[in-house]
Image (cartoon, rainbow, N blue to C red; front, side, top):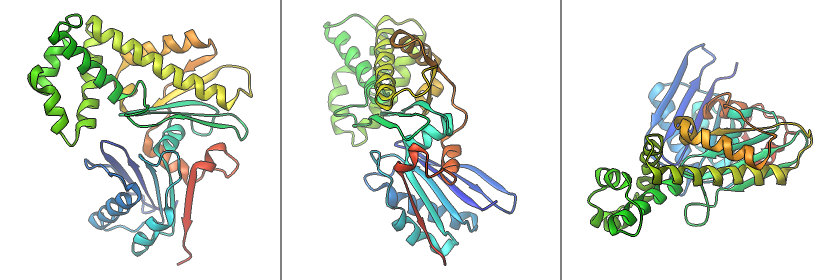
Length: 311
């Protein structure tokens, strides 16, 4: 097989895998640095460093990049910076695309990419494709990590003020960020505040699993938002088959939190009995591999960019 560097550039970290034609696989290197506003430049940098460190040449770089907002990305610029490592093909897509491929491969359905933010992608068996949300924490991403974390911190401060019911979220917020009276200023001064707030989603969902009433209400509201995202994407794409509609996911939040998945399953069933919550078939890196062989006729191909060199 051709040697490949597979990359998943998320908002909170980057994962890489080298699949070598020499039969050796260097699996799941993790780089805990985020790409900022130029994900293609960051990809070229981290790919260059990885290939240099492992002293390996690859034919193909395939990557899913957070921050492309549904665009395919500038594959040519990445190829230009990596030709010295023998790279002749670069394939790029939004990480929601690699998330879809990781979860359902080429099958029709809906995939929720849920991390700090939220994107729902739906495809049918023909050319129909719909992308919903992914508008960022200021205007969208309802039900994602930032949304849940912010709701939890808001509830904690309401409890501190006496504006809301008592909740263990207040203790969790104090342990994670600092005394309640300082949380607002602390977050305003934190240049990484989006990530900090999103990280609090785990505390919210853990407390929901433990029975905290306020955290449980936030979990239910998040699941309802996620279900609405999936439902909107499915309706916009259309239903060619008329039968069950698989709804799967990618991203750490649903993978790591059974309580959120359980609530999502209930909300999906409430919206449409045909929705079937389906565990993902692979990881984001598996989705990046599928990018390399994605048929041009598949609906997701419209969101993919390729660059090739004969040298």
